[in-house]
Image 1 (cartoon, helix red, strand yellow):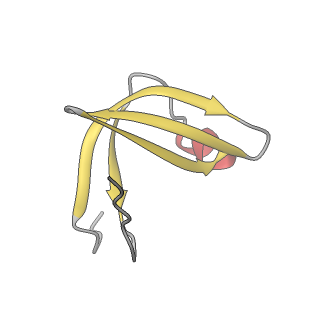
Image 2 (image 1 turned 90 degrees about the horizontal axis):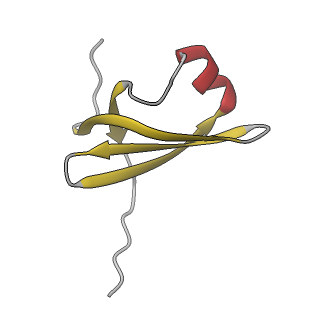
Amino acid sequence: MKLSGRNKLTGVVKEIKLGNVMAEVIIEAGPYQVVSAITRGSVEEMELKVGDNVTALIKSTSVMVMK
């Protein structure tokens, strides 16, 4: 599969918090943690589970920084 997104972090699923409609997927990518909110249906369709190797694709029109 080819994608236009250039910002990719490979990592391991560390935790999945399932809600009724949405899910929070926590990915450990090297020294970073990426938290993604996706639909519960996507988690189930991809059969995501803790320990899976995944790639987080980051595409955003803005990034906020606060100090």
